[in-house]
Length: 480
Image (tube, rainbow, N blue to C red; front, side, top):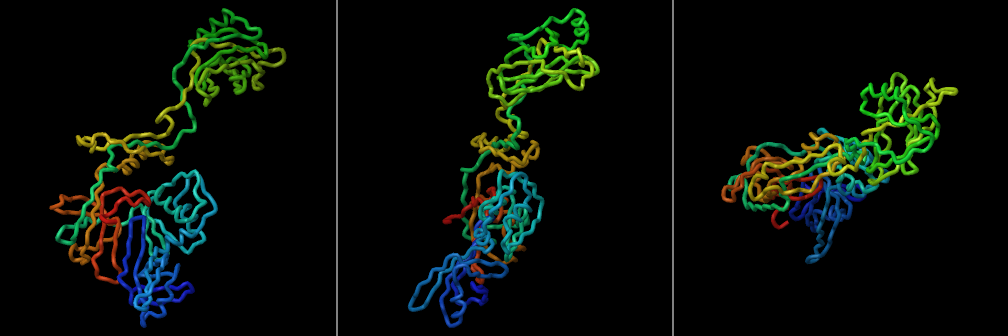
């Protein structure tokens, strides 16, 4: 029985209405439509049907969104179009705040339902999702984002939403032609068929990467009082076999040498000694980096990352002895720090990251169906998802996003007698569809149901093997 809840709270049963039609689409439409005429039995309830009044059927409430009226032989009629009240009430609720970063589904749903009478529950495992910004929209649009981003499905009862990783049961039902289905139509579509997909995870903060190749330092010029290292110094240093040569030296603050490099940045090997001081690198006259060349234990070579993230071109560098290192107790009073210029292959440049190097995780997946001669490698659009930082989880994700078989949808009349198949069939349930004459033998899923509440009329069920992402209604039966 249908029941009307008026704008002011009156509740009356409805009678003398034409066959109600209810349509449910997985993660999409949920509507109810009917005609009703005024009679002596419903003269009160008839007038209660207005825009935004509620029509109740069992545990579900539908809000009137359109109500057309006309006279036929002096009898008033109404054509009533209703949408599930959860959808309409989310659509008319506005969220004025925002969240960003890694967001849990609980945070998202709390934001969506705040200020409404709608409640929710979670049944499953749900990973956090990264949003640049989430909010500042009506709650239904934000709810659709939840369905899409978190890859979840939902069902409603009254004003309560149940969210699951997947609704319905994997119950191995069997739909068979001339047994429990009639009027079968099959639609096959290869437009979405793809056999290869690439996925990219969280983008790296660093825009460049080391070339890993050391090149020889070529000094363009020396400024100041530079002396050659003594033979004793050279012999002692060479005995260490560091792979770095010792060039000129200075103990005059402000002395410098210059060189050039090509790339987005560089690291350099420098000689650190017990008389080392602080050295300043100035790149292109503006970017500076100060390093200490003091080694308190023994003379040694250290690698310093000086700069990265620059424009990929040739840059000029000035390296200058700037000051004592305040931690070095050996360079006090008249004892000045000594700067030894290193020689040899000591420069490692950086270059811009390209392609998959820009991401913490990047992986491709080739479906086994690519071996079918007339399929081959068919490229899907790549997937970019900031929530993945390892290849294993990203690979599992993109596999589930690839439609590597033709999408098949089938619409048919379903005999509702439970005895026909030994079990009831519900929304989102999965099982087998078999039709010998049409060559159908696929494992499939209920994605749409049109039924007729209060009537014994046979429901129309649409099932298919298509991937359903979030709120995208991909499957469509004939004539829809």
